[in-house]
Image: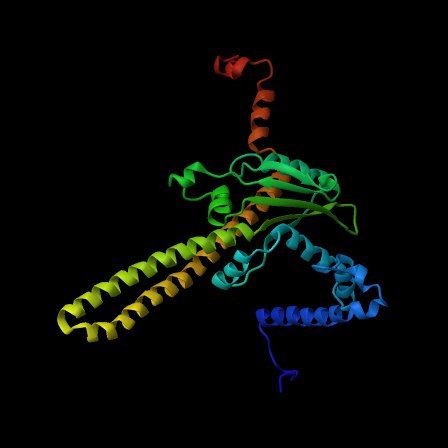
Length: 322
């Protein structure tokens, strides 16, 4: 009996159970939506699917918190419209979350967090470039969209690691979206939730095509090897034996193709984890910058040295014994 109370589930099994139950309940409620609208279903359901309000209502009836609906919608928007290649990538790489996400609650106000972002993100080692702001002021719910620069050093093999290289080259994250939300507290201290997300869509498409290319090369290599085997058998045993062995040679080529494809999955997962670790390190850097009031950021160091010099021309006064 599957519902015995003493059964123990792993964390992964429990998560999968919750997700599947929520999906089943939502699908069951959604199937009833057009029939329950008393003839208004035609206005809610378009030619290409259900209206967003209908989907929200179905989620509420399924017992799904609206905040999770909004979060899922953000992931859907960031991943972009689904294409045929995305389905191929799912089959080749295995399913994955559409968006990489890291978050942190920091002991600072939204304004203080915003200043820390300005000190850390545009400078090395991240060197992010602000492309646009989506929505209202970033301190009031807007989203900062940054471009992760392409590293010529990494492309030429001169740079093998580093936060920006890990994010852009290993994980294939081209854009980062940064959000700030004020966290309610009981006391006077202000806290802010800082969230960084990156769509995996580009990464999965790139890894699909690269993996397929490598698998194709492996298949060609296997076919060449099988051809050499077959040619040798023809010389020794004649065409009948060679024809029988041709099936074995073809199997070698197919095995090479499938093997290379499966081998690329761990490479993709490794790159994603490397990028996510770098994103988490970015939050560490922002938090540390706020803890030290920005004293150790590159820009503030230069300003501090200039201020300390005062009237001393290039700081030569101390060197001259004055």
